[in-house]
Image 1 (cartoon, rainbow, N blue to C red):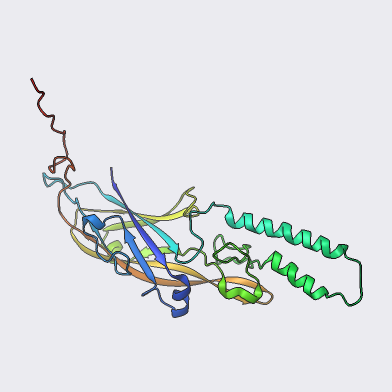
Image 2: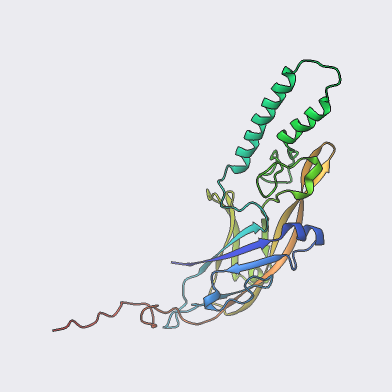
Amino acid sequence: MAQQLAVIVLVDVGNALESKTLEGNTYLFDNQKLHGSEGQGTGELITAIHGAHWSDNSQATEQVFNWLPYSLGSIPPTVPKGYLEDRARQTDREALAELEAITAKPAVAGVDTAADLTQLQRLAGSRVKTTRRTRGLSGQKVIDVTGQLVTDDAAAAHNYPAPVITDIYGEAVDEKIMYPAEYGSPDIVTDGWYWSATVATGRTGTFTYTMEIQLHRLVPQGSAWLWEPVNMTIDAKLRITNEPKRNAFTKAGLGLLPIPPQAS
């Protein structure tokens, strides 16, 4: 069975958008540190892939890469899938209750209706305008990292959506070392989509690949807000060696485990 390799792509979205680059704002991790991966927690990860051959020099099975992008300083992906929708519905109910209270007030001269409307806007929050260029973000309300609604007067303190990997290409793909593709999944963390690749282990060497990552910047558009997509790229590497796969118990080739002799 192919070994599963996981690469975490952690992006400081706010700083990346401000500096207009992923360099210095991306932190890459994988689960191969004990096998020799280098650059853990930096933007220059080199993933170590061992076991290109069995101990008899025959080619071993391929391995599988999985990439998981996350946003640094945003609401963690471990919250329930419908958290944002639940918060939006709750604030809608609160806004309707406030509206009912406002309309029930008797018409009195000198009453500050503008203050009531401002409070109503705070309860309702700001909803992002629909657009075809963003996937899964249209119609959402703007919230901060604590789950509270953000209104027009505090738009700078909002929660950024998770980065989206839109393509993986480069030397490792051109040389047919890696075969990446995007897959649909019911996984509640990856929002139904994730990138995975089969890696051929028959050729040794260090190969570079490029990830195209889409971030989203919140920009005003008239009286509404819009998630504007911003595409950036960052490189990573994988290093394939010809060390044979070994049995973790016997330190030799895979096969039957030795049975100690029975005491007479």
